[in-house]
Image (cartoon, rainbow, N blue to C red; front, side, top):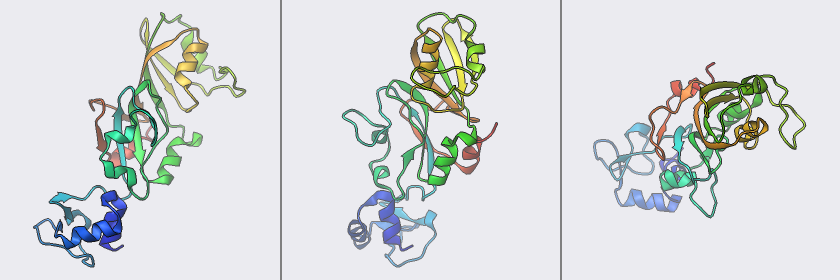
Length: 233
């Protein structure tokens, strides 16, 4: 792929814009030598305004989604893409969220431009466990673990029972719940079916990939080993 198209696909501008970057001498190699549009150089040596290029296609990243932000490209309020560099919105192939977290749920959110990887993660066949921590409005009754693990819980307005889910009680009104499905507001609706109400909700892991100490609103690129953790038991 020619350098002009490669850099344009990363969101640095239209091909015309990128051509102008070349003409202005703003695209160089790691030693500061000016590059030309027909040069063939290793990806990792290319610089724009002395900064390394953004990661190439095949990008997967994780974010600690804060509260009040929507998993959407267009919304009247703040969206998760506002927390990324502006050019990440216009990369080609497009960078998409892997599933969604609602506005009032925080925590681990994945993005990728790899369509096959996205579908593999969200496919029911993958059986990827998503773990959430919830604080509740009322004390747990004590039978929620059995209810959620039974594989017979039917949410309101649905006809297919939920797959078994694992509940860990962390306190009278604090629990961790692992689910393998991604139904609409599933965790909130599960606790509602048990006569309770979720006050705060955070996703803390996907597979064996944990949110860790990443601050709210921050993000980082995942390497291949970290992506593999998503599918680890």
